[in-house]
Length: 407
Image 1: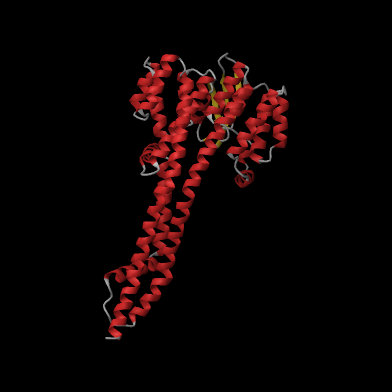
Image 2: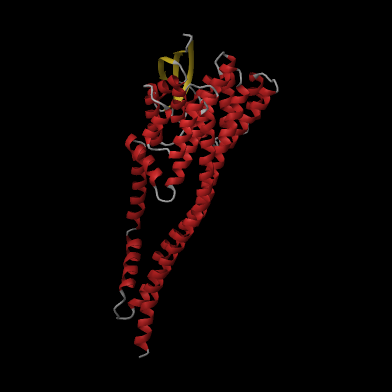
């Protein structure tokens, strides 16, 4: 990312100046538009980030973890509820922050607040730490005078997302460790074990079984072509990473994640739960539906779903109902569409979306528990196949040679 200085005007026509980290000037303009600002001038900024040594030091700094943002929200909410002024609260949190990145960000936010900038605009200049949903909730809290409630909702929302990610990591940890061990075993067998047996078999002028010849050929390929395999794998990863940075790559990979066997349905439900929870929270805070959908589209972490949400927003701008636009996306189950319809009729869309989010969260927890039950038999079958192939390839010629030696 690069640093950009900008000048913009807010809804009242007042001039606002500041800096933002982004990949391009166009991204800065989009971020300013999301915050209700009209950009006047955007240009590359000059500052300490141009210092190569400081950039290297920043790379060595630990990233800001999700639990640190959650703790920041809870602490700031407690201080505001106790009547502590926002400037004094932020100063105390900045001084007590242990993470250098978070400490520096809070210090900059504090300095900009002292210059007269609104809290949501100051936080928006750190998009790596605070998402568009975070900024939108803070903006609503400032405008309604319920900032402590906004931070309470944000802490609860971020805590729920953190727990979901931890459950996914826990469910995938065991199969990934086993598959890694299998990969290491395959390398050891092909480099050291099979060549030892191949040398022993070469002493006898006997025709080897087909399975043994395949194992020896595979081992020879591993030992002679390992540079090709190594650099080919690295090149494939580089090409894949570059492709994922393109619009088509992000779109296709996002769609593929939702359709993967075993994990695809879980990812789909997790994304839908995040959408429902985020939209419920923004609507209950008083954000208009069209603006709420625009904000939520930026926090679902899936380009395919974000595009469908943008289609919903355009349909609602044309006067269509949220239920009809949601049905047109093909993302939601009939149960969710029914709850949206009831919510529209009763005027409680935010409450029913919260119920939908809890429904999806329960489904994700249940599916994650079942995921290990599905993966363990697959891993056992893979190990069994490997052991069978190795046993047949190694011991069959030994039995043949033993039979020939003792007729």
